[in-house]
Amino acid sequence: MGAPQLNGPFTMPMFRAFVPRKIQPWIYLFMAFTFQLSGGIYLGTLNEMMGETTLMREDLMMCLYCNLAGMAIYFPILFRMKFRFTNKTLMIAAASGALICNLLAPHITFLPLLWAVCFVEGICKIQGTFECMSNIQLWMTPKRDFTVFFPGLHVVILGSMQLANLLSTSFMYYYHWSYMHLFISGLMLVDLLILYGCTRHFRIIKKLPLFGIDWLGAVLWATLLLEVAYLFNYGDWYDWWDSPVIRRLTVAIFITLFFCIGRMLSIRHPYIEPKMWTYRHLFPILILITLVEAFLATEHVLEDVFRGEIMKYEAMVNVQLSWFVLAGVLCGCAFAYWWMHIRRYNYLRLIIVGIIALAGYLGGYYFLLTTEIPISDLYLPSALRGFAYAVLSATFMVCLEEIMTFQHFFQGLSVFNMLHMVVGGVMGAALYTQGFSYYMADNMARYGAAVDRVAFSQSPFPFGHFIEGFAEQMMEISIKQLYGWVLYACLFLLLLFLIYDAPIRRELKPMPSWRGLRKEVADAFKREGMKK
Image (spheres, rainbow, N blue to C red):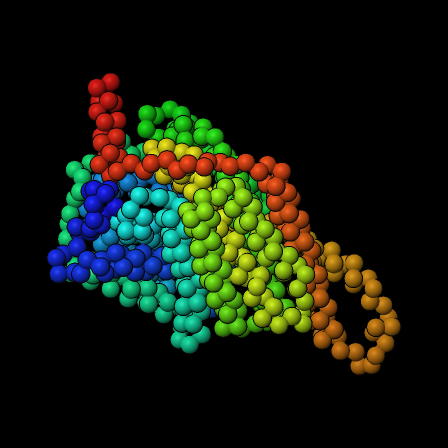
């Protein structure tokens, strides 16, 4: 999207003349990776941060959800910011914000402030990524074909997630967990040097003021999203609705939802418009992405318990699996590109392929999980998880774009990512945490009854060793039970897709030009002014 003409040669006018044209898009692709590598906190350093900062796991996971919430809530105004400011201004602001947040985050222990820093970092992260990828879209696909763009985009997004995990774990193991923040700060400095030295302010369309944005609506939707994340993240720690904190929070969620809906229905240009919810197939897509994210949340609960508490793998052993997840992601993006763009096959059947891979991951852990398993047996299930995540994420985004007009696409993308990034994962994690607690207590009671006096007749009896081994066996059984239930749910979802095998769309609709989009927004404001 760096050129005004759709059919002319690809150019990036924001670069200065001395920068070779062939490397210009690669520079922006590199910067997109750097933005996606950034974050408020990093999962690979979670255990070390808990030990050094005295923060709980729930506190640090809430930092992650705040970062993701900042990304999700910002989508509806990405284009308005692009029409108001130059690409250089937006990217400098995003890189500067990510730099400051990464320098501040390791030194903040006051949780509300840390959560706010992570939220702002999420906004900077998505702003920088969007500016980079939107300007090289015509380089990736001159016809703006989203069956090309979204698989390529997910190579950047999902690939960066695994690379960030690998890097943060390595820094933690060899140096200190805060070195990851310093490394990202260094990358942001490189981005700033490139932007100041190699780019210039350039507009391909006339400036459009930030008029008509429902800022209060954005605050309300962000508040609702963070309240839901807090509820499910801290629910088990507070003992759910036995706690007055959770009861008051539940009431606050319904009140916030009431204000969100009321404002959406009562003002002329709400942050998320009522018409956005009326598109056919929207709710099935939103439900499906929530379920998929809930299934994949087993990684952050059940896998962590198995590898950390039962197998007692060290961080550098655990992180080996990220390489295979990364390989699965790359294969999944390539497969989605081949299926949707090269072969033009049915999208729904591609979703079926993704769910089959997801079932393979869950089945692999269910059947292979034992205390005697070598880590090499987990390579294939991990690769299947990455493959399924890439295929389903790219396909759902293409389907979302195909069923909606561009006017509401980024609003729909915001809601999609609220469920995709935050709600689905935190709900799944809460469900597995609660289920693990239940099955652990139930299995301890059931199998503990089988221990009789004969077992204790040895003298001296190694009680500590016995209890440790017994607890590990109960954990293993409990995890297998939960994987079994999730596998049943995944197979049931697969069966529903096999029964309802129909395409969402077969022909791609055309993508409007930048000037056409800007004209559409400006005309809408002119019509409103004439009415007033």
